[in-house]
Image (cartoon, rainbow over all chains, first blue to last red; front, top):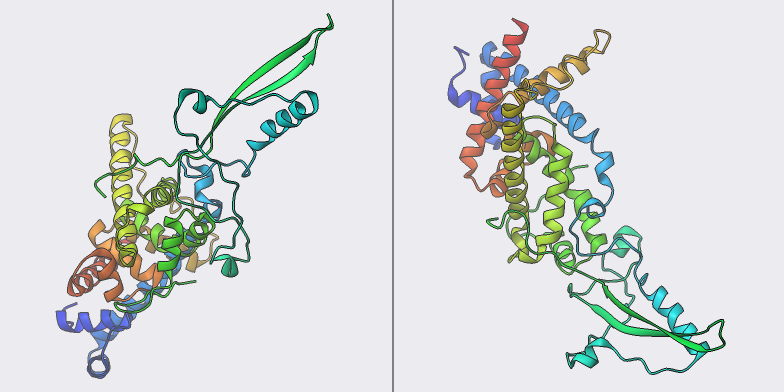
Length: 188
Length: 191
């Protein structure tokens, strides 16, 4: 690079990076015509750039497809369970239906017994994400992550072989959402 | 597809997406990762200098983004926030990989992964691509990082400078040196 000084090399670089002013472009063009070493350097750098762009795009994108699936689906800590929303209602609903068919029995929640405030579990509110239009997907919106607990007792009446009525109490406590906050790189 | 990156004072279409992610919208998150994955992979590659563990680090990054989006104070600075997160995780992964190599006394696998497997019948352009990729991997990280961002995403000096938190002149200088080193490395191979 004996005949190409630092300034000219910078101009060549900026030209390849599309960062030249009009005056600088004129200056570079003059130098490229006048100076064969500069012209060779320009062509070498252009060739490197072309090879680098395609090599990088190929190298970093050909292995990308498997990770394109929702990244949160493979993480251990997440703000959303993997199961469909409302899955936890199914066993409770079955138990409640059985209860209603067999015998009326007052339900007593654990939180009420302990005097702690009762957690109110609101049904999911379906809405359309502002990004649904972009993605052509309708989905329920998320609220601020909160730890919900659904605590209660289901009671089922069963007639035994001896003809007596037996009560089966089922305690249920389920964690619905858990936002993990302790995490990576607290210094970030 | 290259994502256009807005300059200062321009409306950034990703800001509402970030807000949605902060509110826990996983679909916005999926869309966000799809659009930003290329340059984030470029950052990780720029730091690691190879593709070993690149996917794992990217998974960690997106997991961290999802978990820590609410910690982002100013959504306008999401890009530098994401860059720092990606870079820190990649640096950690690089350190872990180095420790493992020392412990296991295995040869350095940071060399171009596919270079040796390149059959002679391959097209010259493909071979050239592998040679260039190997040379990029051999660059010092401070030159490799802006070079990858420039060539993978076609970002301007200003855009690279904004994300990396560097003066524009420094970005330009690093790119000049990166090209110079690449040229020397590729000439050395030929000679």
